[in-house]
Image 1: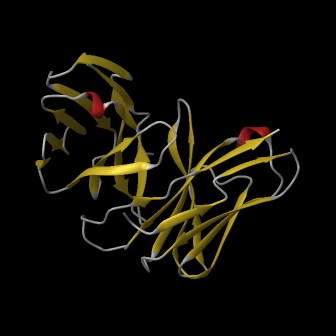
Image 2 (image 1 turned 60 degrees about the vertical axis):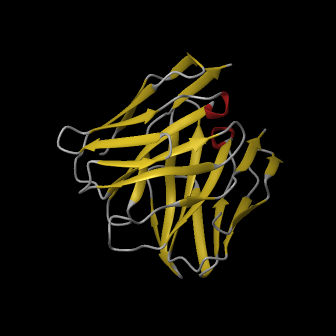
Length: 112
Length: 115
C-alpha cells in the first residue's frame, strides 16, 4: 500500500525567504507526482506535475524535484510572499486507475 | 479552470438518512473520482469511475456507493449516514491518458455534516 508523508506539518517563515517542503513515498512504482495548493475552505489547485521519468519541474518561483528511487520529492519556493500562505499537498499517482495517494500536507504561513 | 461542479456545496443531515452528492463535469473526461478529506488523514479515495457504468472501490469505500449513468455525472451515495462520514468530499476528473502526464482536476468540494 502506497503511503505518502510530508514534513514539516507546519512552517512559518518571514517574507522573502526561500523554503523547501518535503514529501516521501513508500512505493516507487508511480506514474507521476503532483504538488497541489489548498487555501482554507477551498478546493485543490494543481501547481506542478512531475512525470516518473523526470527529475524536476519548474513554474515561476516554484521548483519541484523527484528522486523516484529513494521515494522523495521536494518543493522549493523562492522569495516567499504572504500570498503563498496555504496548505501544500503532495500526491503520487499509481495503480490501474492512476488514483492519487496524498500526504497530509504542510501548512505554510509567510509573515509580512 | 476545469469545468467541475459539485452539489450541494454544504449539507447538514441526520444519522441514518441517505445522502447523495453530485459531481458534474463539462470536460468529457473519462475518469472521475470521489475523495474525502479529514484532518490528520489528508485526502483518501472512496470510489472511482473509468467510464459510464464502470466503477470500482477505493481505500475507504465502506458505507458508500456510486453511480455513473452519463459521462458528465458521477453520484456518491451514503446509504445510511453516520457521524464518521462527516467530512469534506471532493470530486476529481482526469482524461485517463496512458501517459504519465495525466493530471487530476478537483472540484470545489462539498462539506457534509452528519448530526
